[in-house]
Image (cartoon, rainbow, N blue to C red; front, side, top):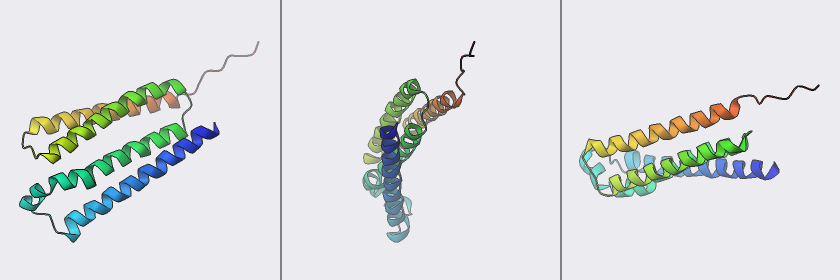
Length: 140
């Protein structure tokens, strides 16, 4: 019990830190360096992928996982969350690849969106199942 709380809190802290790094770098790219025109954005997409998109996506998954582990009631729902984590990391890799070599095909970005939607559905499903009160056997 205590180890679960510690792991959940550590993941939550790392997720918030990663989100902070990604948002700081987003601010640097778009507001400090003024890379808001399309030409400048396309030239910086590989940097954007490495320093903004991936830290934000990894930070989100760590925050979600930290919260799930921190408040988990049923351990078997971790299987649902593990599957959704794998899908999330695959989608993160796809986003990184798309930004590393800028693609204009909307179909590839739609695949990433569909993977993210499936991941969020699995996270919500696992959380709903975990939040259902457990039945207790009546004493006879």
